Length: 371
Image (tube, rainbow, N blue to C red; front, side, top):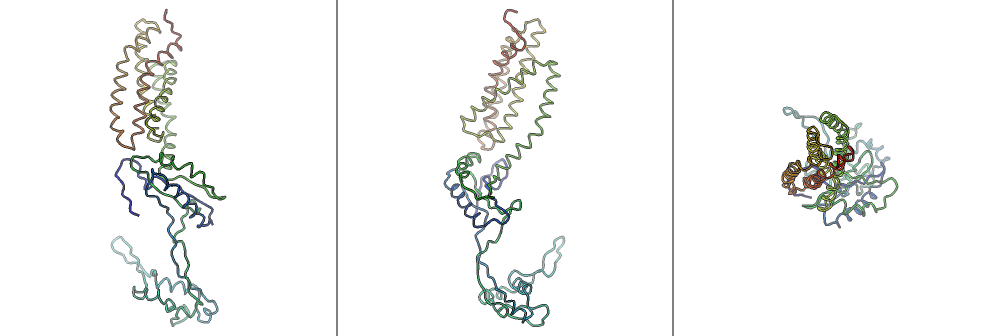
């Protein structure tokens, strides 16, 4: 199958959708093929995906000479001699290496194309040279028949278990999470025999690994941010106000993703982490203005009110320019979830900064209007 894919920025997964069915080490290939066909039929019914296939190849016809041990002993031929002769006649056997500069090329001994085609029609004339004999013996003399049977050319294993993978890709304009969501319920309803499991690979695996790679850096980053905030304010209540306000931005993020019908994937997670830094900056600006007002002799109540009024324009302008700056990212399916996260979260978070920060400030500092 030849696939044509549009060039895009993002993960380089060959197949974005990969559902791998694995069974025991001696699992029946027929069972794996039936399960794969059932899940592939579910995927084919989804209008959001294309290029559905499985990585299990079709069975191929194999010619099997049935070795006769009694005739073999009379002729001095064993199974190894028979295998060696058939390999030499068709696939060829390596007899040496040819060096060409830095490359080692194998020298293969096998029959000519005419002879190979002849042996396919009359395999019994294939000549066998026993190790202990000086004369060739025809294959028909040491076998009691030649049969054909179907065989899987490759047995794919994953973690030492037999496996088959259903592969596909979302259509243009559709993300992998949307495609997975459209078939997940039906796939999970498929009854698996004991010992058989489904593992999600492809973009699902790369997303899980990417998210997991962020976890080790979150704690050091939070500690470093906390250290900087302590240096700036040299107090605990401003830091509490910051950490109490930032989580409310999740309301705007959730609303934006719901409106645009987008999942909270890896890029949305990166956008949320960036959003936390932007929110932090706006709150620091507001609290620093309140601290300046306090040094000028204002009460806590009037200091935060004046700070919210005087810093409203800078905060909103900064948020507006950032939102306008990420609008071009909406055109790319890879970046759009991050753009929506930043735009919706920052729009709601900026308004929240001007409302929630004065409220938390008033509560923690016990500010009253008549001070």
